Length: 212
Image (cartoon, rainbow, N blue to C red; front, side, top):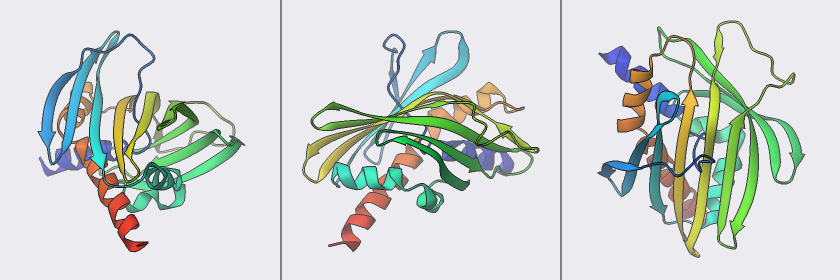
């Protein structure tokens, strides 16, 4: 049981940059958790046994502070569970880049890694969206002993409510590949994804307080 829980936490750790706005028809979201100021919703996805999950939280920090944390690839491992390393592979423009993240999975699972393109979009004057999807790249070939996972769709949506208050929405849908069964991934996404937003909230408020 302890090993299964560690696998759950590991998979939850994969939520860092992997979250958000669907390009498909609007999902039928069902609220499954409301705890510590964080809401969690799930929705079935056509042609997939892996559910999609949306989490929402309001953070007492400016949008610019949260963006700064999300953009800081070298320091992500300080707040993202099981993240071994994360780095920028290529800066394509001011609003687009290619990144790599490697997660140290607990035994007996193999490590997972992702290569993904990030696009930043200003949807409104007060809203910023990090859109992310997996992409093949010669800049980071697959490595022996590490399972290359597939980020199907993901994004963080940051909405400034006030100068020092931001709503963060995270929607996540990914295939971790390997032998991890869909039911394990679905349990993780139903019960533990709020931990990532909880960590982000703590990180944002601590960082803000240190700079006052």
